[in-house]
Image (cartoon, rainbow, N blue to C red):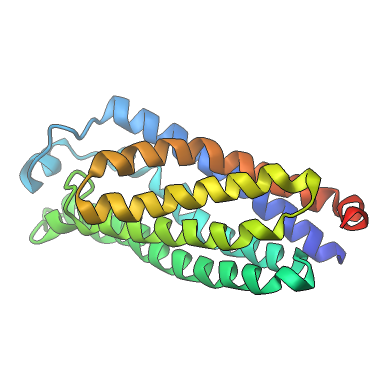
Length: 223
């Protein structure tokens, strides 16, 4: 494994862990300071809106390309007999990044600017408080593909020292599919609970992947 690959793998994984931690903190603060559970219309959302509510969306937007970089590094790390699985994971990561990038950029531009400029016609279909909006649909689709990508990449980590990563990737993969199923069935509490579990498990997995790349020479000798 060359030096550039080790650095990209390490720093992309560390960055992902930090971004998810920022997302978690932002979501907690936003929920406490700007609760949305009682908002049922665009008018109510406009009245209560504050740009700080969208703070967690910034690290979420950055997470999408970082996930692609990490998955690409995992693909190059994979042994030859498992590269087909890592290639599938990388491919699904590209779809995930495309969906989530569009999703969060729309929130930070179209929705935010529309509310601030009082141009709210049709925005309720994109607003976060509306569980039947594109906001929830795009999020479920993006994180669903993230879950599929992680499920595909999980078999790459076959060594004894990598077992925790394998199971964390598998768990996060199941959570991602839970996003898709919960949204499709209209059981939005599933999405909310899944996001909390993902916020805990995914950064742990990213930190362990970073350690793999940091200690890549030792890991390579084990494999």
